[in-house]
Image (cartoon, rainbow, N blue to C red; front, side):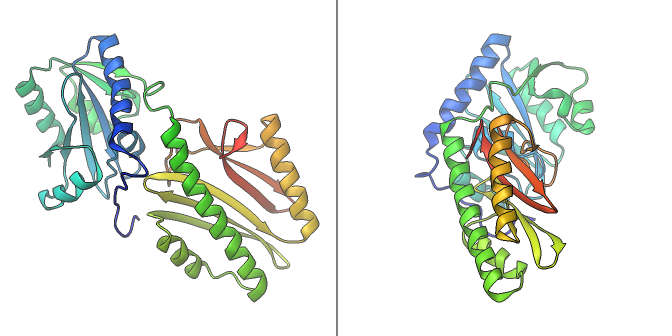
Length: 291
């Protein structure tokens, strides 16, 4: 689960970034003659809303509605007492309580005169939300071209992956010196560095050789790094295999767009893994280079 404070550092990710991203949405709406785009979000599927508005829900669901000619609206089942926090971390100004999401969508459509709705990646909607849209004209708007990573997105993920690499390499060095893997202490270190969510896995080959995998969320941006501890010659082989797989397109590529427990992008950002004799080496990559 996410722990600690989620905050928005506007020096790292300025509001102007989101204006450019919303311009993509409005271009897609104009092309399809639609008045508004609906974007579904929950704890497992928060990336699209985060990319467009910088909103990441905790354990709840929400719908972001992005009109063609007005600021976005958030329909949120969270308590109104957290709305000041939401406004501090997103571009939303209009936040509406919505314990019954689809009923509130109907009210807003009537209020704004929206007879047609665009839905971002309509086939991926939960059944309850999809069923609630029956009886009105809805149009699927694919995320391709709308939520594709831009330079600020890559910059944020690069910060995250540098944090993960350094922390993991420091931890492996400490484990080599002490002869033990202290995962609790490692998680504490990553949390203090700003990780909002973590998935840490250790794979042991036996004989003191193991690999540690860290999937880390930093300001809503997921990355994944895997590093081995074992005989030096085998580690060298792993690194060579990783770079060969990166150049050739071979190897196990894990799309950070899903599935659970983390979600990242549209597929342009992925984690590449290679294996050698029970040890693993991996990193977050974009194109044919480590991020």
